[in-house]
Length: 392
Image (cartoon, rainbow, N blue to C red; front, side):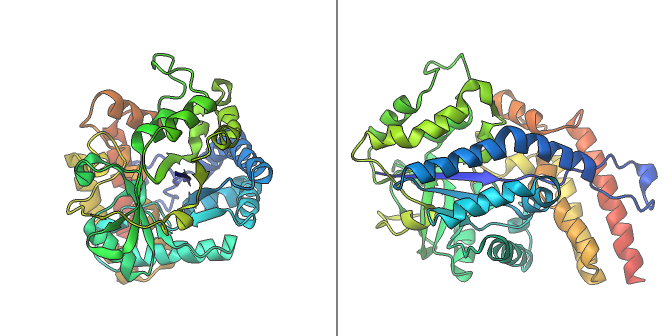
């Protein structure tokens, strides 16, 4: 059984408070000082300690492997706020046992737009990974693990060998997520499917004292993995799981450090990067006619497009994008693409309840989804006016 530990590094460019009265003022849409302040805090609590522990694990355990994805907006903020974090990522990549995963540069909803936006954003991301880390990724992920038959065909057209997706029952139809599959629509694309119960045991439940398995130790967790049938178990999580979503005093960082040693006790367990795992023989094909994701309990696009506010904002953004493209101004194009980042639509979520609603509220700094919508639409309206002015 190969363990694929994959962690996702992302920070959005959060919007400044942009009022209707600010239209035409020339103000920036993005609150750079606040974004960088937030980044510095997370770097101190999560990025530095967790990356350091991964590096130590790689040095102490030659069999250990892991994989990372890192968005362009994360790199932009790290450059300004904590460049040493990027040095740590480079140190991990230099070991030869850490694979980087491709995605959209802006962690955006470009996969829902007409061509060529998705291809251009993925190309930007690939170039960034080569320029900054010397990596040429062979595996692709979409924002929040969005996956469909159409996206598999896109991955094949871009010559990726594999994709990451949610191991959801709705596409597996009774089959386990612990095998490598191939895409039904693009047989050359191998699929690694997230084992969401085991991933969420760490990502969501680790620090919950109400959880029946609390406290979760590395030894217990390794035992659960060893008892899982199959060839590969894919543990996919946000990087901020370690030190931010679960604070250091929960023991989460010690858990991460101890996991390679706990795994080594079990002879049937080993480690693989995403690029190594896709070479395992696929069992069969998987089809996803409708897009699935790892977001929320419904595993669909509802986290970003589930209500009228979100759909209205996204449709408006698409129309502004046409004007921005015609204007031919690189600065406007960058602003528009930053506005396509999925987080902005995530903050407008109003249709859920229970655990889903709590997660959305945790990430949002707005007083309500309606505030998020109004702020976004003001910025988007201003961008539209700027694009129209360029076209006159």
